[in-house]
Amino acid sequence: MFLVPTYLANSSIHGLGVFTPVAIPAGTIVWELNPVIDWELTPAELDAMPEPFRSKVRAYSYLNVDGVYMLCGDNGKFMNHANTPNCHEDDIRTIASIDIPAHSELTCDYRAFEHAPWVHELK
Image 1 (cartoon, one colour):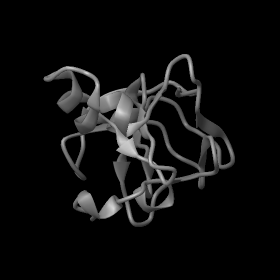
Image 2: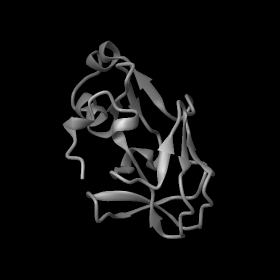
Image 3: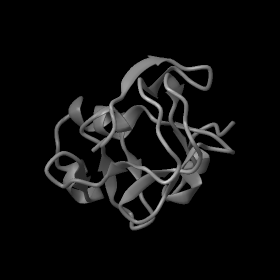
Image 4: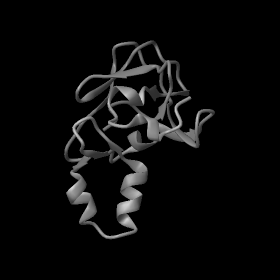
């Protein structure tokens, strides 16, 4: 769940991206896993769901290094990958790596938390 204000806008990276209307100082926690908002689904749980819901979950989630699908319940599902992102991850949080100016796109490195990031076209 984002802990800073965000909005969606067209991204120069891919489709929609997550932007912030406020300046964010380096070291700020911008997102934190919240099990009430963010779903963790095993492959078996996802397979038990009906189509087309199952396909939508796969499109907007990622398979983490533990083999669990993570579906962010907020704008987190639109955060784009960058080889030099302005945010980094620890186990349950996303943290601003640098001072991020207002109206900047928030980016992360999918390779830091995704089981198979190569399924995405990483730029």
